[in-house]
Length: 193
Image 1 (tube, one colour):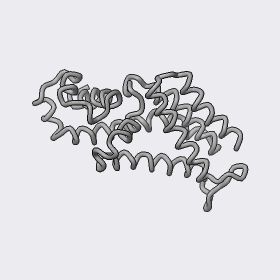
Image 2: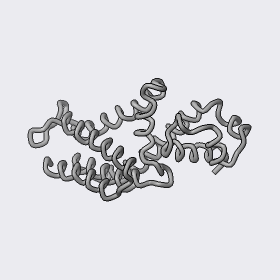
Image 3: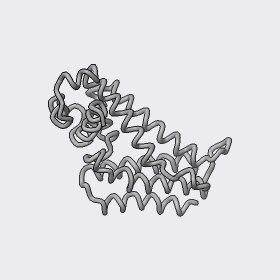
Image 4: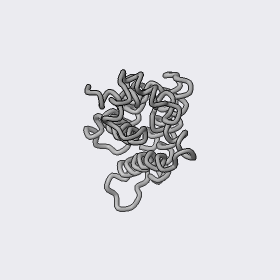
């Protein structure tokens, strides 16, 4: 890893643990084992770093959560695979996100303090909801239903459940509680197939 990549990686870990606002430049310099000059050779500001960490976090999110989804034909099966990946490959990824989902941390702390940064995070949440709905609709011209339940409703349940599980896990760090939360969503989806 070159210095820029090291700074992004170490910052992502720190932001997931402490948040963007509570992580100082000095914290970042210490974690990356670099100087202010080393930092400012690659980033014009802490906010510039935020956007690069956000991009890297999104890349990791896609790699971890979308793994194997294309191999599944059935729409609900794709969502179940996503949830399994979310639990086992993403939320339990202590190497990249030791404090839990970085996007949840950003959303909670930046809303009022840095709304322009919060809007960038919100784009990811909007994208996730759009993807869930698209997968469930599976090419139908009008919203599909599963056992009479519209995909809009299922999308909201899955999205809210994912965020809730993530927040809970970031607080208690209990793999058992995480299993219970995500498995409840999976059980729900299996019942509406």
